[in-house]
Image (cartoon, rainbow, N blue to C red):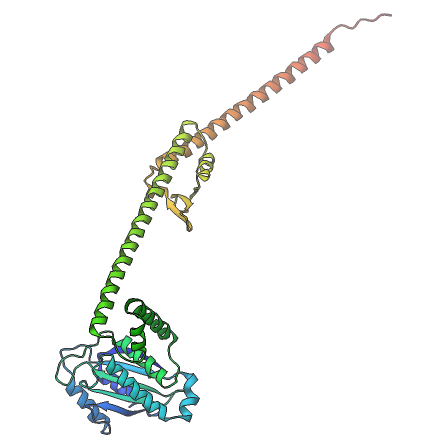
Length: 348
């Protein structure tokens, strides 16, 4: 059995839906109420609730929906009395957990249009004396009441609450001892003294956990700052080295890679480095690390000038080789012509 809780600011709208006044096939008949005539007309019941409501409170009512698990359908069909017992147990469990049902108007309707019957309970936030109902943690209280009532009646319940209850009992055992755990299991609530101790220990544990969390955060920030500072210094050092020695951007990238940083340029022209921070690879904009990106621009400019100079030199060497080849050809031609023009001597 599950219980879900929501707030309602429109009492009329909620009542019309829960009473299924516009959809008779849902059923919507009243099975229990407090301060509201159970067997009177829908109009009379609504007028009672509106009369009880105070205009001081924006939230007019708490709407609690109780729904059976589909696994319980066959069981409830064979044992319909369990449905009534479950509802009564749920109401008592709510009362035991501080939801003041005795002094507050409420009405509960049953819907029969789904695989398993379910219930809608409208609990006003205005008590009979005009004071406001304490709705603190009412969702958790209702869920716990549904869980306990389900266990009492052998019905299915939310497994998450079972795990939470085991954790709570384990905590009570640790702080208050085995005897208190057995007492709580038997249905005896913790005394104010016990609750005060639990609250005090919980507050101390929370403070210790917060300090530890703060220390871890401070350590993490310090490590990240140190890591970024080291990256910044390495980038500047390699950039200056490349500028002095007229090394290429490719060489600059290889130097950074040796220090664990992959250099790249994104689609927006931002220079970035990617490094592992111990858990995953993280990319940083070099400018965000505090590096003057003009260093890299100088490397790129020098590289372009060097390429231009190298090309000019290659073109000059190529032109010189071509000139030498032409001179060589010209010389060979002159030598050939000289031989052809020389007098011929005959020995006969």
